[in-house]
Length: 242
Image (cartoon, rainbow, N blue to C red; front, side, top):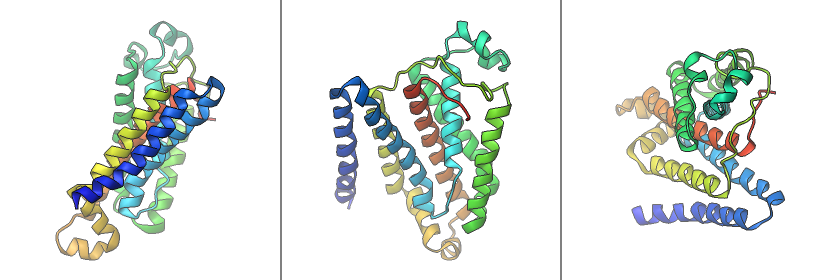
């Protein structure tokens, strides 16, 4: 059984690896298309971790991508430039700069924290109500990032972000997300949340907490989405809410 499950992972890993190899072989003008594909894989798989396993429609994962992108971007702008282009930041954000890998961890933490915060009430919803509520989260996050200059650039473009997501980082990042999604799907929590998808009433009857299992999946999905957002902003070198 485990061997069969491991074989299922080999296909996605092989495809991502081939795309990564091609990204390193093509010209600089064409490399961006392969990098976009790899980052898109990370984003889509992060969405699948929750939506695919729980069966609950969610638009909120793009909020976590945005949170991760802005967190990684703000934390890697050179310290000497922050005062000029981000004068209204909270002092702990303005006076701190981290490296590339650390910023990806910050991005994942930002996505997970936001997912946990909004998931506590929202994971009690199902069906259309859950979809509408997560769409509201998307709009609230967009407005918060656009208007609150204490945590980011507001409506202006955040520039001077180091462009560190090349072929290697994009490939490894996509593989990390794919592997994490596979491990979760094979784990006991992954099986429990799929049980809540198939029959929530029966799952509750045998002692499975639907709310808790969905919340775990939502938070993990948020962490992976935030991580993917970090890859995205380091690929683009800038980001804006518009």
